[in-house]
Image (cartoon, helix red, strand yellow):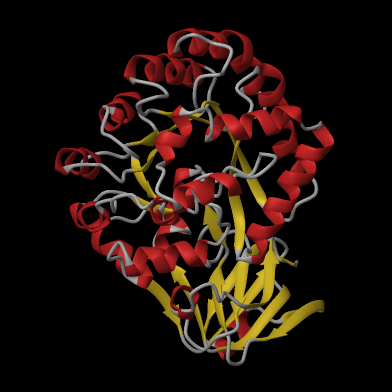
Length: 411
């Protein structure tokens, strides 16, 4: 009989995505709810979730077991942010002011601002400054319940700074309680030293990718007007796939340019954004294994059209939810805020949003043992200071946790 090393007793409820793997269609709206409940953890794994008496009888606490009183509280799986850009220096507050006066994101980008302004600030910073910034940003995410996060490079656009960014991300894994999944966003936009997108992509593939692939797990490209079109994106992604990286695409943010067919062709893990995806794109995703990652905070921040969230879910697509944390178009680290926006603006239910930023987000990052509060999964647990799990999305900006447990240990 396995003994618990951490025991949460007498919870109002314990809530988790059901099943295994990604959830689609009606399954996305289903949760496994135990009420009342206790949770037993041994080491870094969940032992049992269920009725308090049953869990206590089958998995009694060991002599050094840590116990937590769950009365009036809810246990949830740690949140998974599958699209985030924490590796940057500087800010874009001045551009935020310009947008509040009517200038568009694309207009600012075309005049030398946008991504390139963050590239300039990040290039000028030291390795120590960048590592400190990554750690600070991940700390913000942790405070809002994110226990597993993607971290993209992409604000270097040269070999030195892209590697500095990936090294800062990998280095953060030794200091942060979060599990961090590094992504090489070598094709974020065209580096300022290059005359064309094709020329820049050849540079990245030949000079940066070989070393970047030793640090990253996935690769991403911004397929959009003003950045990269299908031919450059295909060249970049094929080269990344040959190096063993999972494939991701920024897709249909401002215009449809063939990103979804390309993602399906190459077997990409996900397409992210989709604010301008039409009915054909929805149909293609619904019939594929490419996940649709929705970023409602970015849409709010830039006043973009709403992605077809309801059509994607009802059509059977794999739908995930993320913050898109970055300095220019989604300066928020809060997945609960993204959940609220997905409910209030995209027409998803609270259950669909919770599944989308736990089980389905973990699928996007190819991490099969996180995102669920079930036996055998990593013991990443949030203790929500509320009697109803829906408060996580309902309380706008008010996520309040009495305990955060990562890998079976109190953070």
